[in-house]
Length: 115
Image 1 (spheres, one colour):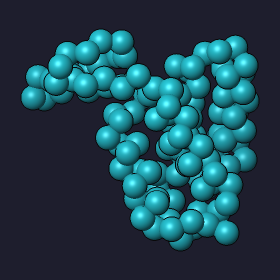
Image 2 (cartoon, rainbow, N blue to C red; image 1 turned 120 degrees about the horizontal axis):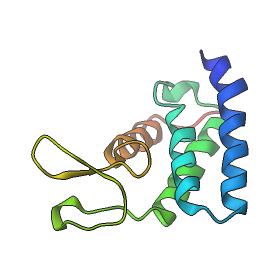
Image 3 (tube, rainbow, N blue to C red; image 1 turned 180 degrees about the vertical axis):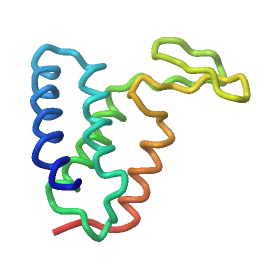
């Protein structure tokens, strides 16, 4: 599975990312960075390579700078919100709940880098 993700999925997402950035499609670029990072959801921190660590750090930086996060508590608008069980909204503008991405970034950072 890892080989398929690295050899097929990653290059496709990277091509789409380059096209999105060149055309100024920041929202799409944020979503693509999120998907590139999510490729490493189940990668143990000890198995991260330099390339995967670079992917995670670049995605985190790009998303934090460019994604307009919604504060569901104040009813902010802009990104796609899905109703949560408690009646509040969940920002899904990245294709994943932001808390899932933050969890991914924190788990991988805590585990150290690759080589």
